[in-house]
Length: 451
Image (cartoon, rainbow, N blue to C red; front, side, top):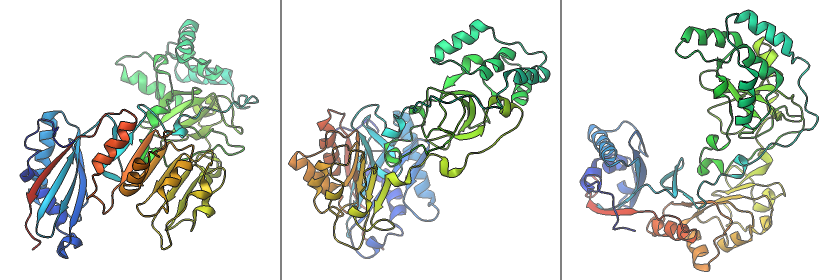
C-alpha cells in the first residue's frame, strides 16, 4: 500500500531525509564503486537505529531530531525506512509506518516481525511449571525464628490480619507459604509516605519490601522480549535443578526487589529445590530465575546461596545453527529435541530440510536468502510457529499456497533483494491471517553521483 500515509508532511518530504541518507552513505563501498547502494534503519521519538560509522554530522543530527519532533507531533512512535541509491544518485526511499501487526525488533532494521496471531507468545513463555509432588520446605525454614527475628527488628510494625492475608491469597489464586504469611503478620507494609518506615522494613527483610496488597505473581508475558528474540530461545529444567526454567509461574510470588530485579517466593520449585525458596527474577533476562536462598528465613538472616550454572535455564541442545560457526549440514543438527534451527551462510551447496521434516518440537526456522535448496520443503515442518526467510523464498511459498498455517509470527529477511516488493510480500503473508496491512510511502529523490 503506497498511497496511504499519515498526515506528517515534513516526514514524507524527501528533503527531510537527505542529510540522514548522505551520512549513512559516507562510507558505503558500493556507492564509491559506482554500484547501487542500499541503507535501512529506524527513527523513533526517543532514539534511532542507523547503520553508520563514526559521529553524525550536525546536519544529519538536526535532520534526525526534526524527524523525531514531527513523529511526536503526529503521535507516531517510530518510522522505519529503506533506501536504494543508484550510481547516478537517483534514489527511492521507502518509509514503513507503524502497524499493529508488526513488532519492531532488534536485527530487523526496517520491516520488523509480522505478528500473525494477535497476543501470541513463543512456546517458552507459555510453559507452565511441572508438578513436583515431593517438594517440601527447606530444613532451614523456621516460621517461629523468622517471626522472632522480624519482631526484634521491627518492634513497632503493624501486621496484617488473617482476613487480609486470606484476601491476598484469594486475589492471587494461590496459598502462601507459612513463612510469607509470617512476614506479613509482622508488617503489612502500609506506611504511605513514611519513607523512614519503608527503609526500616527493607533493612529488616533484606530488600525493598512490597506491601501485602502489592504481592503479585510473576507474569511470563510481561517478560516476553518480542518474537524477534524470543522465537530463537529454548529452555529446559535440568534434573536436580532447584528452580524450574520458566519465564513465570503462578507459584512465583513477588514480594520485593533490589531496586531493579525482583525477589519472589517460589511455590513451584524444581526437582532439586524447596517449597518456599527465594529466587531472583533478573529484569535484564526474559527467561529463568536464580536461586537466592533455600527459605525466607535464610533470606532474612542473610544466609544466601547460588545454584550451579549447569542446572539453570538454557537448553543448548534444542537450538542448532547450520553454516558459519555451526554444524555443516542439517542432517548433523537434526535430533528429536530440536526446537530452533538457524541456517546461515556457508561455503557449500544450499541445504535440504528433509532431515528435519516432521520433527514434533521444531517450532522456529530461520534461513538466510539462498541457503535453502527447496523452500517448499518448509511445508513438511508441521510444528512451526516462527519462520524467517528471504524475500525470494517467501515468494515461492506464497505462489504455491504453501505458507505453514501453524505460524504465529514471521519475518522477511532482506539482503540485496530489495528490488522485490518486500512490503507487498509482507502484506500477502498478513492477509492469510486477516491481519492489518503494512502502509508504505515511496519517495523519489536525487542525491547526485558519489563524489
